Length: 427
Ligand code: GDP
Ligand code: IMO
Ligand code: MG
Image (cartoon, rainbow, N blue to C red; front, side, top):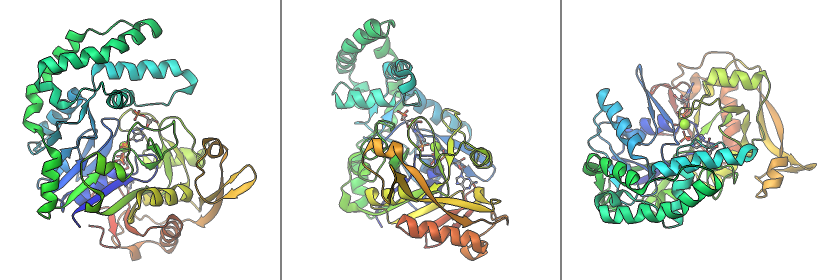
């Protein structure tokens, strides 16, 4: 099992941080391959809680080398403060490797993200405001700044000039903002160069050599399948590819190396930001899921929108990622409901639809078709094996597995490392 991918099967916040951390003890490398500090991955180790944004969750496992791949966008100030925050808590971060080809989130990318959202008004995406979209846009437009550019002042200056040429026109003439000075940006970026240099590496070479040496490499996705720029609910998506294929381009590893793709799946559904969400609840059940599940964004502190489990989405995630298995998280949050509705299909303009429609208009019109499963009231947080779960909880898991199209190999019954039921040798 040389390379495996772990990714979100819904709209993010499925519990990827916890799952990665669990596997971190048995893998050699944990690699972020896309996204940036828009992610918020929570890991609970004993009585310690860590919120990671840019760093791979494997950083908390001493034997593991954390890698920021070429597909990630890196905000250097966030990187350095996350590193020093962990160092202060006694976490050794010295093994970190950062791709020289990863793109830098510059201060002007953050400005453009915020200004664009403000001008979109009601049509805004509800981004995290971290400059993610504008940085990927610069990458695709070939005016991006890469980590390696920090080590050549002349190139860096030319590139910042090229990027700001158009942006300053837009900022001043369209958005009524002040122009951003090239020298100021260059000076700020150069200020990070020496601090980041020890981590910069040819990560593509390192990872491929590691795989040749039979080391185990885990790719940790940020965000989730439905936030994917190609396969998500466009335009209400992030600007990268969290889906499995993104691991190949975002780390420079061929698809033939990947033998397992784990989808992290919450036992209900949440979403942060704008966009369609068929099973969203606006009643006390939604409130209760938010309260019991602690559904508040790790990055922006926004309340997460909550709803029942959506099997149409889970099936879609299985298909577009080629999932081999699921880690079902937060089953404990559903304890106490007498009955639990599960969306098995959609009704779109009077017709029953079993699969996610490709058309945005149809998806906006999708109404959930629910099947109701019996709930359970017993506390399940100390369950250690599947048979410890009450019968109705077992049946809920089996029903989700059947509907979602891939086996469930682990179940989360609490945020802690040991609050996990392993079924099909997850680890
Ligand atoms: P990520 O972005 O996918 O890593 O997920 P987040 O960290 O943003 O959100 C998941 C939240 O659920 C975090 O607060 C986790 O500590 C918590 N969590 C993860 N798994 C479980 C679980 O099985 N049960 C409960 N109650 N909480 C969990
Ligand atoms: P993790 O890794 C949930 C959402 C934002 C917004 C959209 C675009 O913790 O699961 P962006 O700033 O990326 O341009 O915002 O994507 N979003 C997330 N939602 N979890 C995340 O990360 C997210 N990262 C971005 O709320 O709707
Ligand atoms: Mg999160």
